[in-house]
Image (cartoon, rainbow, N blue to C red; front, top):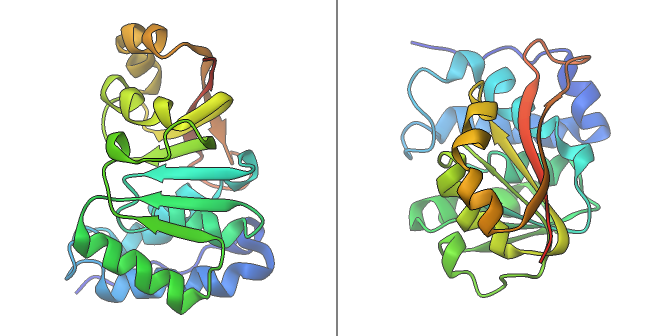
Length: 208
């Protein structure tokens, strides 16, 4: 039987005085995530480092009203909402069983800065109103940009969590980058000074 990864020392640095909420969320995900189809069976030994901290380390980048498209298990949305209670988070997720989970976590963690919307990103009625949009493990950039860029207001920003292939994804998404008038598209590594495995993000500005 696989066991939950021990809490890394870096968790305190990432979550500060809200680390207890991060622990509660991580334990809930460890206990119920596989049976509810939220995480795979091999994720427990790396749940903190690969998922929770990987998501939360980017929290300082956000401001205002932020959408998380395809929030799923709450990675990154719930982790970010814990780390940044001063930011308003809109978790956009089309699958009912996942929105049920997200609703339970918001209630159990007492997060008053989170709204959950059951819909697809491209169908959400709030297009063009968000300051920023994020997503993690949703799809390749050329598919993801048409789902995320329209949600952001003029001069808003995308902060998309990606893997090692991020720069190649930018190259492959050249057509979509032009179509959605994105500028300053770049890859950044976040958290190298704190985490053993820093998080890679694609950042871009939206110019209407």
